[in-house]
Image 1 (cartoon, rainbow, N blue to C red):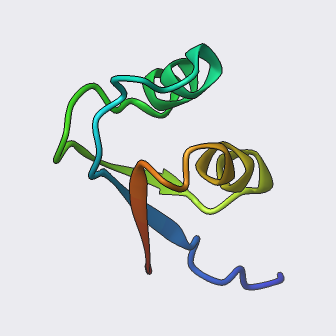
Image 2: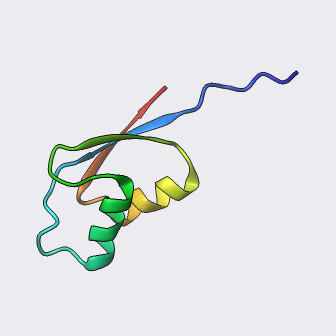
Length: 66
């Protein structure tokens, strides 16, 4: 049996408001599960999540955790 490495995770924290942001950026934050400033979600480190974070990189901070 192959051993799998522990899944990497990302702590995504909203640090800026969505006021004045484009609609797709607002929708991306909602789909990540972020509703207001200082909300934190833990997501799996996958290409889909990385792409969503890249869309709103100016509104969030990201930390890798194991």
